[in-house]
Every structure is written in C-alpha cells, then in structure tokens.
Image 1 (cartoon, rainbow, N blue to C red):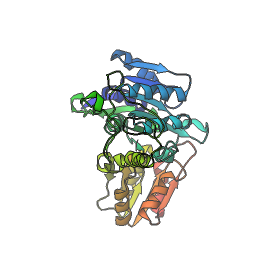
Image 2 (image 1 turned 90 degrees about the vertical axis):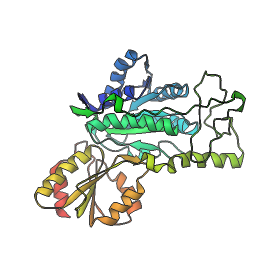
Image 3 (image 1 turned 120 degrees about the horizontal axis):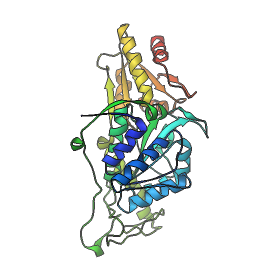
Image 4 (image 1 turned 90 degrees about the horizontal axis):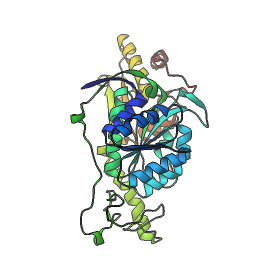
Length: 372
C-alpha cells in the first residue's frame, strides 16, 4: 500500500493519470477546480494534454473528441456545469464514447452555495441528458475511494464505451488527510476493445445485444461515422424503425445485462442489526460515527452504503428493506435517493435530510436513530 496526504480532488486527478488518462478538457468551477489544476501539472509530465476551454460546454466537447480519438479523457465540474454539459453527455452516450466526469457536488439549484457541501446531483446523474439513457455513477465515501473509484470509472467507461460520472461531494473533495492507496502494480487497468480484422468489413455498431460498440481510434485507417442521430452498423444516420429500436435496446442492455460488473456496496455492522442506515458519500462518514456511538449505548444499528448509485443496486436495496425492522435514509439533499429506496423497498422508512450546505453531524443522526 502507498500512503499519500492529499485532498479528494487531487486524489481523483492522480487516479486519472494512473488509470491512463492523457487528456483533460474543462473549465474551473468551485468546488472541483483543484482537479483541473492538478491535471494541468500532472499531464505534461506523462506526455498528456491539458486544455482549459472558454466554458463548460466546450470543456466536455473537447474531452469527448479526445476520447473518440482513442485517448482516455477526463472532465470535471460541479452541478451548474453538469447542467451545461448535459446535451454533450447525450452525444457521448449515443455514439458510445468512453469518458469520465468527476462531479464535485455543491449546494443548489442554480448557483446555490458554491463553497458548501451537498448531494444534490444524485437524480441528475441517473439520467444526465434527455432520451433513454442508462448511466453509470459512482459515489466515493472516503479519500481512498476518491482514488480507487476514479480508476474504476475509467475501467467501466472503457469496458462499456460510455460516459461514467464520479460523484464526489465538497466534503470529500476538500477533505485533506492521509489516504492508503493500492500499489500501482496492484491496480487493474481496462482498455477498450479494438477491431483488427478486414477494414472493408468493419462495422463498429454491429454489436450484439448486451455489448458495446467496438470503436477503433480515429486516424488508424478504419472508416466509420459518428453522430448523435440514430444510426446503423457503420454509424451513418438511419430512420429504419427496426434499427432504431435495436440501437436503443442495445445501449440500455449493455449496462443492464452486466449489473454484477458494476454494482458495489459496503455493509457496516449489519449482521446483528435491527436498524439499517442507508447513506452514501460524505454523509456515510457521519453515519458510521453515529452508528459507533449508538452501539456503545447498546442500540443494534448498521450501515448499508451504495458505492455505485446508478444503475440502481435494486436487489441489494430490496434485501435490506426485507431484512431489517427499521430503515433510516440519510442524505445531504431533500430525499433524492430516498425516492429509489421507496420504489424498490416498497415499505415505510425514516429520513434525515439536510440541504443547508453544512455537513450532517453524527449527533443528529444518533438522535434520529434513537427516535426510531
């Protein structure tokens, strides 16, 4: 293991470099700006390219272009920037470009609380553009996970040829402490598949249901078209009803059919618990402290923490809902993930919601546990 003293934003940047990222395109926005700054320092050292664009829209578009050329690419932002990038996310979903976006969440809506913590982008990350989209969104809950989940985001992006969102929040992004990271030789690195057959027979979008397109990098002699329009096997636009239906079904099934590869959860002191707390991101750190305090008072309570928030870990949420007598969902918003718990668990549960830009105190969670 390696020891590093860093904040979460900087760890995300180091993770991107170690995962093979060689391009960053973006625009500074609080509280994510340290990611861009760190990438501007790190990328030239490894032969990569950093570019600050004139706005968030241009920032994500140049990253998409770099990714389409075969380079692993990163952009970073916060809630207002996610809004601006949304149309471009749809483009990347449609023509299957692997891209990682780190979203360091702050108070909203609109400009909201730029320097304060929130978890207000949870539902937005589920479908960050219009149309039928099945997004992947990871939510680190520790400094170490700011690193490991960013590496994993690049692996998932390359495996499924799709944008992946890393949902840091301001607390994790700016928390500065020691993190224990895996050694470089222990990190799994996934690279996108390439087609090496006859060039005339190359049909990148002629993939079976449940699998992504195989898009060779630009400028390597393999000709195909990319577009935001519905398209056929070689990428050229089509309005053929059967082809359009098959395309959308495949874009969804390439995620749905591989839930086991994406899902990641943590259980903490749940084996003998009567009460299960559900929390994620920095709120889960306060929840763990509250659980430890409650345990010292003889209250049997544990934590279920989804790390991959989307696609929804439906089976795990359903199992938690069926097993424990009482549930408490803790969020730094007004109940966004609680909507998913309600949909899947189909039972009553308690909530603790806070959207004033401040971190939830463990004592507040403990009080709510005792009320149950």
